Figure 1 (cartoon, one colour):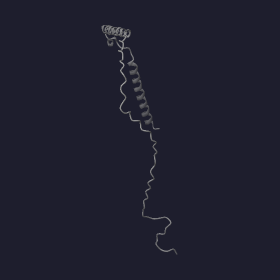
Figure 2: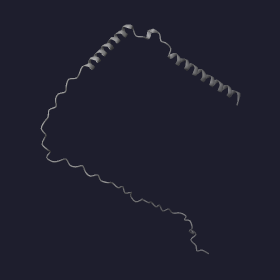
Figure 3: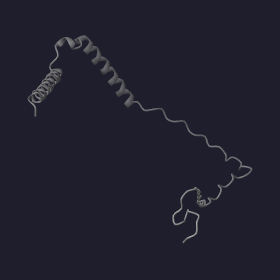
Figure 4: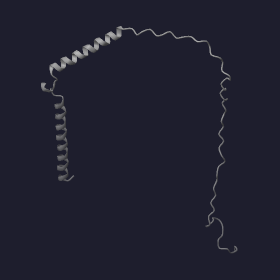
Length: 124
């Protein structure tokens, strides 16, 4: 291998290692602790907690409350029978697939035919 090729390969591998190291440090930096400026204000947290408490109380009241009783279903006299019964479902038929006969295409071509004499003369 030529020395310039060795140097080029070493440089490419060094750049790849440096890029990987930079990516690793940035990834690890994402999980670092954030300053307190990004946290919501204590008043906002208290307001959210109060709303959650009210929602929880409302859910508990709804759980204890029983739904009203359903109304009684009225009973009616049987309706008159239909004038004609519904048509019966047609009987299932068995289907048999029959393949069509093969379609053979023969193409005639002019040209030499094996085994035939093309000189046009008699055999001597």
